[in-house]
Amino acid sequence: MGQFYSSPETSLQLRDHQQWPPGSQVGALSSSPLVLPSMDEGLLNFVDFTFPLPDECLASIFRFLNSGDRKSCSLVCKRWFQVEGESRHRLSLNAQDEILPFLPSLFARFDSVKKLSLRCNRKISRINDDALILVSIRCRSLTRIKLSGRFQLTDMGIATFASNCKTLKKFSCSSCALGANSINALLKNSSTLEELSLKGLRGVIAGTEPIVPGVAAASLKSILLKDLVDGLSLTPLIMGSKNLKALKIIRCQGNWDELFQFFGHGNAMASLIEVHIERIQVSDCGVSAISNCLNLEILHLIKVWDCSNFGLASIAEHCKRLRKLHIDGWRINRIGDEGLIAIAKQCLDLQELVLIGVNPTCLSLSLLASNCVNLERLALCGSRVGDEEIACIAAKCKSLKKLCIKGCPISNIGIESLAWGCPNLAKIKVKKCRGVTGEIKEWLVEKRTSLSVNWDVEEIDHLDASSSDAGSGQEVAVPETRRVESGGEAPVVGDRWLTILKTTLSGLSGRSLMACTFGRWPSSPNGSNSRSI
Image 1 (cartoon, one colour):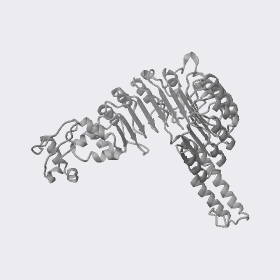
Image 2: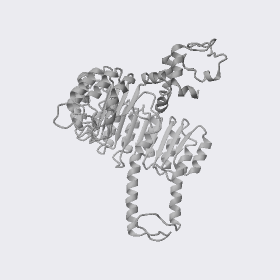
Image 3: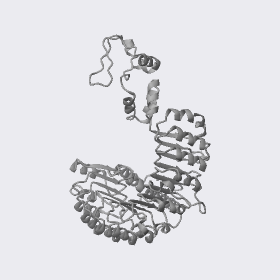
Image 4: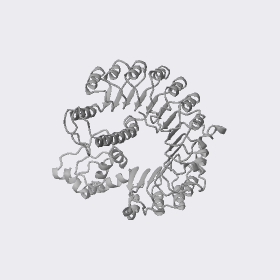
């Protein structure tokens, strides 16, 4: 077959003129195998064995390949080049200025693209209205587009693009210079838009034209606002989306109590199922207003420093359908047992609980295990949870399937209790728990052979060994310090550098808690965009 790859013209000639050897049988799609009787070995090397396959079947095969393999297949022959281009539904382009002359031919080939990503790392890109309109004309079946970079787009260009893309369902832009007029132009011409994601927009500032949902008022289901200077200017957009199901607000300035106080008035936001608020100014009053969304099922309270047990108790009292609760308490102890007990008593359908920087005790954990009989996923990160709490979880969480423990002061004793409890436990993840050794991992795997175990105790053991070596008289590599002997005093300057280093590493480890917790395990089967533990 090597000669076939180097001579695509020959294979094309055989296909186009059907110059098969006498006596050969070429079937279309049938149960009988392809029969090629006696044939010269040299000629056999030039036969295109994919000839009987229709283009649709060849396209289906290409869908199982990754992007790199698809590119390689497109170079085999002209037919494969054409089929691969016509069957590609996703395309991601580094939209530098050099790509401009090739855009017409590029989208003439990839005219079936449904999901397109255009990104540019330069400060200003020459990608303009003409390029975006060309995409809308060539890719008539486009459903999702993501723009990342400072493209030279105008209100008219956005409006023309939206009017041409009749099936557009998701629009995402990041670090763009789009303003209120451009967003309004999009919403006025996108009657099928379901998801809108706005990140780091420089043109959305106070005093501009109000952003309203337009013709997308009935179709919008998800809104994501991130890193906006004046995100509150989008309040009319949020409140005007009649069927909104998911609202995510991340690192946006302003007092967001002003928005949430409208929730529940006149049946507003009654369709809301998911709320994600992260690092924004919201008090217990705002969180209590969110509880007016009686159909709420997923709630993320991530580093909302003004939220306390009072706000969480209000959520528990009204949101009886809550299934997923993620809390990052930022280790300020404003949320604790009191709020978790309220959740345990009221939210009986809870399936997933993630606690970061929150310190539950056996009292709240016991109630959660007893009342929330469907609790399947639990994560405890950066908490003062010890062996006693882990033993309580092992004894009472009968339905638990996935458990994540990170940065908690537990030991091998706590892990041992998991060998006898949690009968449905399928996966456990242990990270940065210095009291846990590698031996207990092997012992746990031996006791529960069906359990999937994932932790980094080997790395921790290595660090501990290095620390013990340093204390036994070896030289310590710390800037501006001399040799530190066991039992001796380290220089004051060295202590200062060590303190700075420990503080920095502590802050970095706190930031990585969320990524470790959410990055590995797949989402729940209900189709929600929210990741599971």
